[in-house]
Image (spheres, each protein chain N blue to C red):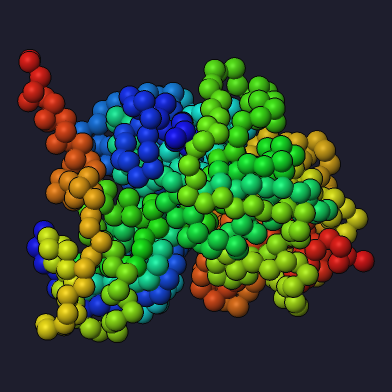
Length: 420
Length: 172
């Protein structure tokens, strides 16, 4: 019996000839990352264990992206802790201020994650890098401390589920809609402890931005990781960003999957996840009349330049509704600059948007767009749990950038085709 | 591991880590500060009602969402003795063992109890008893590696023990 893509990558990072689902292994990590919220605990654990030097200063990334620009005195203190540690250890990939972006948009963009690598991050959306054909998974701060010390992490080799995507995408349908549809179909624990391996003819047609969005939300189905095959799209994306060598693994033809699901992408319309679970999805035609107070376009899920282009296409020559606060947060400085040079920021300003800095801010109810009791937001982010973006009696509706933009204009949940 | 006995609080399926400790309080990692807001977005009055030693009983996928270790830290620092759920989300499961919060899987318990019931969790024998005379329910066995983590006081303790073992064996 052969190995799945996930099993192959994990195996290559151990001393074993092969690995099996359910087996506990210790694997070498190529990158360990944390942010301004999770790093302070990891640093404290690292020191408590007597750690004085990280295993490899080039294989650690520390990104101050969550409560930054520092939202209060305590947050400033957390960033100070991370900064001091990064300097002391001469961490190669330390980001804050003007070079900082939302970690899972930033690190692939900067060529810091490559195909075939094992990445752990003290952030659940670390699974994003599966888009590049890497094994990437979220862990806690203690796991991260151990990895910073030893360069290894323990894993239970996951079973893999295979998603075979077929059919062409309809207009305004993107990776966001495919992954919301899949989560709606299998549930928020439908892939719990497992790998989601994406394959099929439609994958070849998906942009890297779409793949990053889909792998990003694998955790919302409970998955350990989401993973895409390495193809020309991957190779082109990586070649422009890094000259490091990498291994492009392929799944064996006789690999064993715990489930194989076929997804007809041509039948999927833009999706909206209603409160309070990402699995609570409806097609845009079935949303009814839901008034919104805020629209957020950004985050590690949908804050890339491709997302802003789609939003600008919808917003050009239009204005956000009088009762809607439209927030646009480019996910990285490069995205911000590209949006400026392409004239997208002018479109957003003309539409009445507030353009924010690259930050996770509103997505997790941190700052820069918090909701009051009774308020509703449509957001291109990844979670709509109770209280996620503010008061526990507020609501978040997850959608793609085109739907978020159209909803901002009309003041209610709507797709671009609903615009006059 | 000693038997844990306590009054229970029940929660449903998919209790996410934002409900366990909302992100608005993550500007600190001080356990006592986090404990003050434990379970706040699932039950705003939880910390007023609970007593140290109480036990959380939940449905499926407890701890889904964010990887924040602040969630098990808040639960442990609040004085919760252990969490028994039908199932746990994987990052929470890992975090709990890594940092030393006892958690147990039982598919049967949640549907047979009400808030305020007393239960007894005997981890060594793999049994849960509802009330003093209730019939015993079995707990899903804890894998040996995870048991070792608990014995060693979490992942960092485990690594320290392994390192000490290597030092003892080394010829120097």
